[in-house]
Image (cartoon, rainbow, N blue to C red; front, side, top):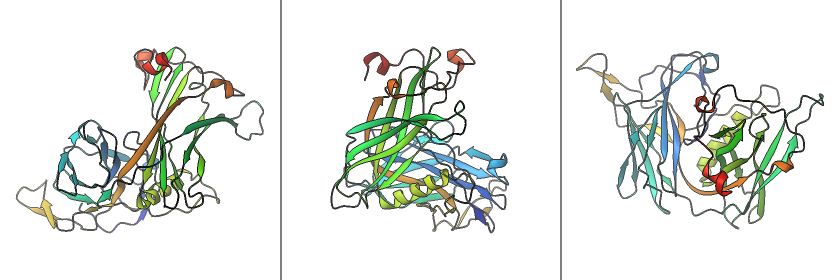
Length: 347
């Protein structure tokens, strides 16, 4: 990247490669910078890395633009030199073959070559030891405090219960891969834009019951059956710190009790050995590039345990007013073509 001196004030909002909302940034000057969002796990793929570009804005919150990165070359290389080429899809997603998975004890490096030739490398990431399975997903109804007895917010809290391995440092990350529900005669499967982190520093070796999500009753998702698919990731201390800071940023609401904005460091850098790239506007000429080029995001290598569950509607003490669909089922976002198999089989 070829940029001048940049002062940054960062506010982030991330969702995983399998369910990601672009990172939001604010800056004092206009610039172009790469955002890398994604990870691989011990499960067969495809695994996706999303590349987007931030640029030409005063503030993304005020209408700035994230553009997905096209025509890049993306590779994952293990410690033995085995290279996996990711295939470009839509909207900046680059995916591994479906047979690819991270192996225990192996280390992996992400390499990105952008369309103009800029090269980026991640730090080597090692797959953590096999983590604990989710023993149970527990649910409880929660009504949020309100001075209005009629207009209130409510929903379901979801907890992961598992046995933490003793006498070792463990770091966890949770996401809901998808929720499947029926509303007003239509079926939907959609990602849930939340994440949760935890260190076992104060609960080493214990049976841990951790609240990982709150699904708000929006008048749609709890009309009929609803199924959630949860992933629990065992991650490195470095990855935990990155996602903990992202989680902290997501909690900012704009008052004096908000956590201070922190610097969210990436584990991906510009190739320090690449001094110049071809000038796309002047054939035959080159551009010097900044070896300290700023990259946002994180490349992770995680162990994953998954568990799915239906949410029992009888635990909802007070339901919100049901909201109907504004369009035919086939014109709605995240609509499924017919009843999902999980509803037919009951899990």
